[in-house]
Length: 115
Length: 113
Image 1 (cartoon, rainbow over the protein chains, first blue to last red):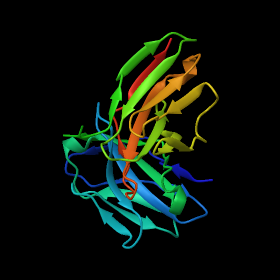
Image 2: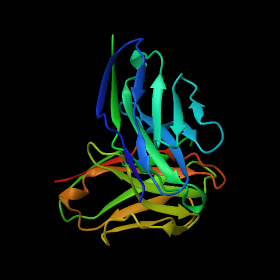
Image 3: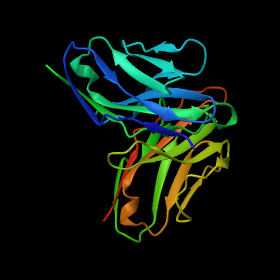
């Protein structure tokens, strides 16, 4: 069965510092990988996704994630964070093909950006 | 509307009561999903509709939970004989038939007292 592990429940960081949010998954089949973000009092929003092709994917607001099949990881990175990046970040995985609709989420990492 | 709409946004009910939660997906989206998010956890899959039919209801925790989508658009999640353990945020999401991006609503916060 698939599972997603986000080891860090909270990551405090100063503004303009780099950050990495870790995500590891377990699956016996090929997968699609996602990062969702939940800002305070808002719904989940898709940040970026890996379906196939280039293993490095980027979002419009400066985040990037790299699919590493050998390490079964999909860590999220940003070279310089802003106060507005403070949010809960969820990593998710789904199987490809007919089961691609079912997302399995990690428990989330709260990114707290301090001035 | 522009996004997935869920009502009510907050619901407090007494143990043993019946609850309905409504979801209005993005116009034109044929796929609809329900997830449940307990405090401190990520969302957990409940059920997936393709059109009017439930294509996968394997995530429903027991037979007190039921969901319908009679006309292939709006969906209602129904919970009978609510228990305190049912307290959670119930998230609805939708996607186009050919897309892989799933769009979530803001959720319905259910508290069972």
